[in-house]
Amino acid sequence: MSRGHVRFLAPILGAALLTVQPLAGFAQDGANAVEGLSLPGISGFATPRSDEPLATGPLGEITLTAQLTAKGKDISRGLVWRVFRPEAGPDGKLPLVASAQGGTSMFQLPPGSYLVHASYGRAGATKRITVGKQGKRENLVLDAGGLKLDAVLSGGVRIPPAKLKFSIYEADPGSDGERALIIPDVAPNAVVRLNSGTYHVVSTYGNVNAVIRSDIRVEAGKLTEAAVEHRAADITFKLVREAGGEAIADTSWSVLTESGDPLREAVGAFASMVLSEGDYTIIAKNRDRIYQRDFTVVAGHNQDVDVVASEDAAIDPTEGAD
Image (tube, rainbow, N blue to C red; front, top):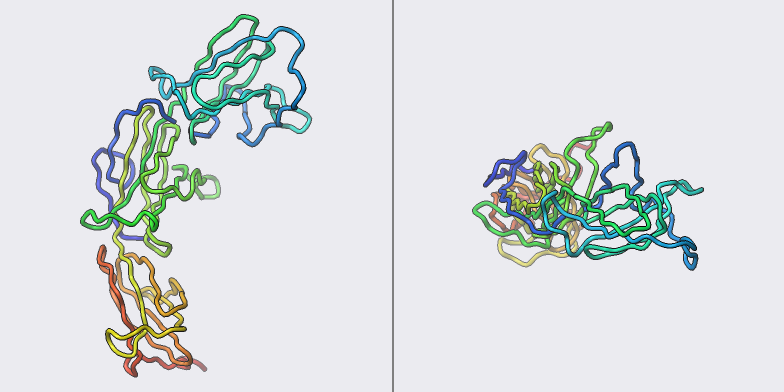
């Protein structure tokens, strides 16, 4: 793991440069438990039967609204509403009787009891409602906010977005010691809607060992912006016959850590990868010859590392063999 560090603009639980600002109309897809009720996930419902009326009697009208906080404004767009019957069907799933997308939504349903789930990105809430003959209104409070993530190199240098990604996990490990993954491969500066709470965020620069972990708290009704600092650099390797020469094709590459553990392999005239700051050894194999060179990665300093195909750099492939 990278030896990177994180700075704060506001106190949170992890390593991140953090700002929090009010958010108007915000939240995502978990299901908050209704007291005494276990609701299945969004995929755990039966699809409604088409071309069948729900009832032959009069329908009741119910209007559903959702807010990020108890005193917040109604969310005007981005909601997904799902209305379920509260009793599981023969397949063990809750029958889905109606759905809608957008903001405030109105449903006409046969009188009776239902479960309503509202999702807003990855934030969500569930509520039991009763539909009667008289029209009524029900509100769901999502208790949710937004999270926007970014990362920089030492000195504030921006990281190319294509080489940066985030994964969001639950803060607390499960019984197996692993954290549950909530959202993988989040792009930098994308706003993610989440229920309020603390989350474990993993920032990955490249795809080798430049990884930063931090715990970040999302507040209801606010947008939390967090930026981590990676202490790493983009390194390009090439095998040459002389310093500054042309790269030799058909070369196999292996990167070893300071302790000699294999870290990454590649094939080609050039091998590029992002590495965390530290000391490494690069081994280049071309035909039946093997060459190596020690090198150091300095945080934020992208560089080309040439391995010269000379006797000084060559190693005996049978060395250490019985």
